[in-house]
Length: 277
Image 1 (cartoon, helix red, strand yellow):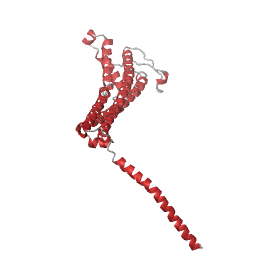
Image 2 (cartoon, rainbow, N blue to C red; image 1 turned 135 degrees about the vertical axis):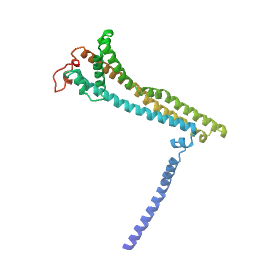
Image 3 (cartoon, helix red, strand yellow; image 1 turned 180 degrees about the vertical axis):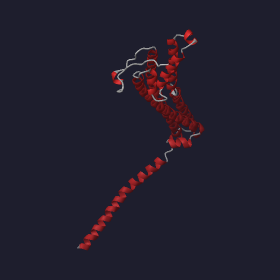
Image 4 (tube, rainbow, N blue to C red; image 1 turned 180 degrees about the horizontal axis):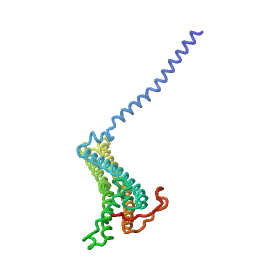
């Protein structure tokens, strides 16, 4: 009995495996065919590069360079604006709370934008002597020097924005050129084949649609980043200009009020006196 039962179990197992193989074989074959079709898709991005001509490849390379350049400019300008905002908070707290304006400027690190503005005003005040003092008013002389310093800061903040504006305005047209070129190839393929079959049209039309999508993907971040940076730079330049005005007032002997929460713990004074010569 035991031997017969073992034989029956073996026969049942073999039959079960046979049924499973019959069921699974078509599914595995279908999956393998699908994977092979995915690898050999003639209408993907790889096909666009491999089958495209020199003009199609050049168009795609230009769009990629536009995208890389715009993201680089966005990243660097973001870091620059964040650094300038942090420097503005520190400058107002340190410069106008020191014993003298020169001492407050030297509390800031070398290369600080607001130290540059303060030292420019101090240098202008020290240069207002002799014939200069006879022909030009002291307030006008120092104010003009501070305005030049603020203009230098504004010029540095605006570097790279022209590139973002150029990318945002031209990338859609570059993508449109790729679209027109792809449609041209589609019409050429139809003319050669003598019939508008899917296999003759799908590739070139797919290329044109990819070019359009890439052009929009490049242009939209550039335009949004440009608008955001212009707005942020306007706010930062206003802060810088107000700091220059306060430096001019301090050089004239005025007392510059510093908010209580911005005063350093080491000093309770809130003043900005002219530098002693």
